[in-house]
Length: 444
Image 1 (cartoon, rainbow, N blue to C red):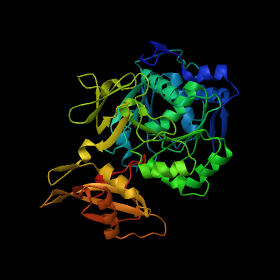
Image 2: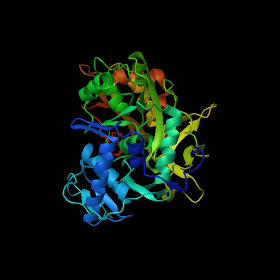
Image 3: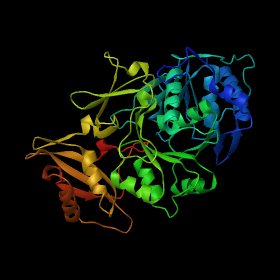
């Protein structure tokens, strides 16, 4: 498939193709056990029959309220084999929150699929590229999470573009310790099936478990957000010989954190993406994370007159496209002279202080250069003199307790005076969305 194409008019189901070509290859590794491609395909067929017996039909949305692991993968691929639309749901939601996210689902799977299936259930032999494969909710960092309909063509183009940028190895082992209810985690399972490689799935992020996997399970790729990368580097053994890339998304990568990774021997690539674009939009070359990199092959990134990042191409969800044919991301950035993207933050997050625009990410990056700062978050606070005052919340490194005066003096050496926080508070943790992104709206 050429990267500039949306996808073939018809797409063969990924899992049975992988199982036919590589039946004995490991498809899924979990703390509870492993599944080869032949085993996962057999379980997916069984799951499709169970879903059909419970009333699911092609095109129906099926909510999957299961933790990351084998049962989730079986339900996911069961939906795809049946032609139903997989709709992962966040298991961390409170019971009263779940009905809203599950709206529109024909049924919700909240336990491993067991029992008799429908022996007459017809398995899909071809998918149209424009058919909806999954409904994935946004992270909620810009407000209430929105359901995004992603097609088979979106997923195929995303996997192709990512593989062309990062490379692909038949022995790939991609560690997923992200929520599979969000596009970053879900894409690892789907891309692995598309390429017939191995997805190693953890039930959640636990730093020591991730370190053990990196050292004992020949992990070649891992997806992280800046916070989890920092936690990984806090350990005494972040380097792993087989690891060829830690892919960092979910927000700009501070230069200080990139330097820590390089010093620890962890190869890093920075990526920028959105649910509406089926995960990655741009990705840097491995070992060159100073920017979010150029667009993936087949994807176009433009910057409008106001600095907003606009995206077009085969990975963009059809219903996310504006009348001008582009996805208006709400993010701000610029392209350097090599066409690489530098993201400065959300348009809605920009602080206007004394008539000057301040990007929170720039101030956060300055704070993170202080050796006592582990995490930093910056936002605007209403102020009678400045309109908005720049304020910061900081998480100190273990055993450190920097003073507000010390941190403000540090910022004053690196930033224009109007960007220096008027107040800095120390907190034990920052508020975050379920996908690990900073919940800036909860900082006040």
